[in-house]
Amino acid sequence: MMAAAGPRKSGRARRPYARGMKIRRVDPRDTVWEQDHARYRVYFWDVPRLTAHEFEVAEDSDADAVLAWAREYAARHGWNHTVYVVVQGDDGPGLVRLAGILGDPFAHGARPKPSTASRRRGSGEGSVGAESSGR
Image 1 (cartoon, rainbow, N blue to C red):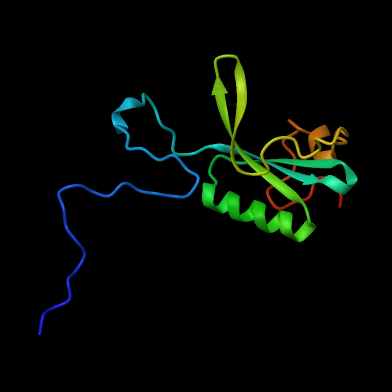
Image 2: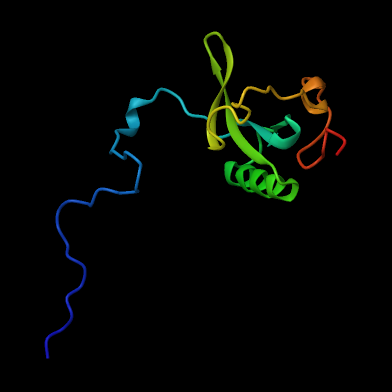
């Protein structure tokens, strides 16, 4: 009786594949810095009410925990969401989208009303999980 053949072994590793993504190998030495912790911005989009609820998450939070919280919080309220990492550019802070809605969720022409959270931005009040909008 012949033994079943195992996985084929070759000298080259297979290229990772995911539908719709362009994946390539990189040299990890091509970056000049990295940071273990980041600040995150999470925007919740209440499209029927044309309202956005914005939160900033502290730097000691894990990205996976932030993404899980954002999905759960949005689902609980029936909202869409976008998660960004805050980065510092030469001209000031900016946002890089990590997950969620791409583009303007209010693209049909209406603009969102500022939430209580956005009016108090910079006040240092509130915490993750606390609703700043009073809902």
